[in-house]
Amino acid sequence: MSLFPLNQGAGPSGFGYRSTAEAVTLGLDLSGKTYLVTGCSTGLGRETLRVLTLRGACVIALARTIENARKVCAQVAGDTVPLACELSDPGSINRVIDQIRSRDYRLDGIIANAGIMALPKLQQKFDLELQFLTNHVGHFMLVTGLIDQLTDHGRVVMLSSVAHKRTYHDGIQFNNLSGKKMYVPWHAYGQSKLCNLLFARHLSTRLPGSGQTANAVHPGVIATRLTRHMNPLLRVSARVVSPLCLKNVAQGAATQCYVATHPAVAGMTGRYFVDSNEAIPSRFGQDDALASILWARTEDIVSQFD
Image (cartoon, rainbow, N blue to C red; front, side):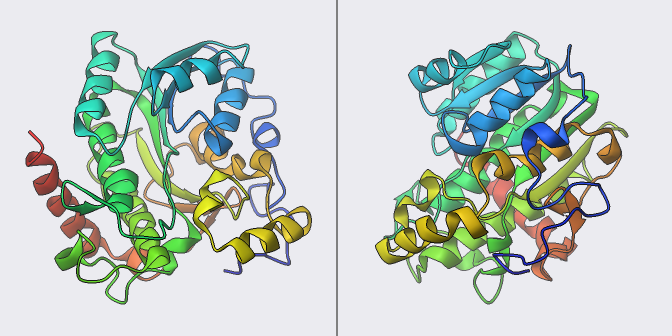
């Protein structure tokens, strides 16, 4: 898949590259439904929060700090619940899980939107490379900790990326999850996005309810704050070509909103979506054995946090 597709028309779903989050949810009444969205303070998360509340949903808005969560919730007119969740901090994740459970929120969807991208230098926490910890392990803890709160037709949407195709040669470096042996910023990011995809794929086989689903999406190439770690020349190039080639935030949030809410996606699980249409992931992204190994290894990692 090209980063800048020439064919930007609608696909089988009726939506495509230039569809916006408002467009893919047009006519939907989400009143009475509750969604949890991570990374709500900026970019795609903020737009997802805005559009879901616009359609009548209650959104549990997670941001790194309660101040950021409250600030963004104050900017939308709908029903919101601001909560703090730092995905690289197991204690913070456990606290927000306890808050949601204690209030007995029933979740119609979890949109795992937050993430960090292509850190220029190796950063570690708990002896894990920070992108792997934040993008994958943190979301693994959060989602698995809230499975019992999903409604009978609850949907889990993991933000992966076309970058999952740009990972290390063996897909996931299980012998180098700390990044100490080798660290390539974009490969490490791609590895974390591959993990997001494989997590959704394997989760789809473990969900307790027959109507529950788990899918992964590529939002598109978007000029958001995630690009702040890019080479300065690439950032300048991105600003120049953005109006022609890159998605804006409204378009970038479309696929996750579509997969989380649209009736046409009901019952579809273990899939990968691009531009609000089903797509084919990389060979690693289709590897069920790799997904199973990743799940077991992540459970081992999480158990060490207790």
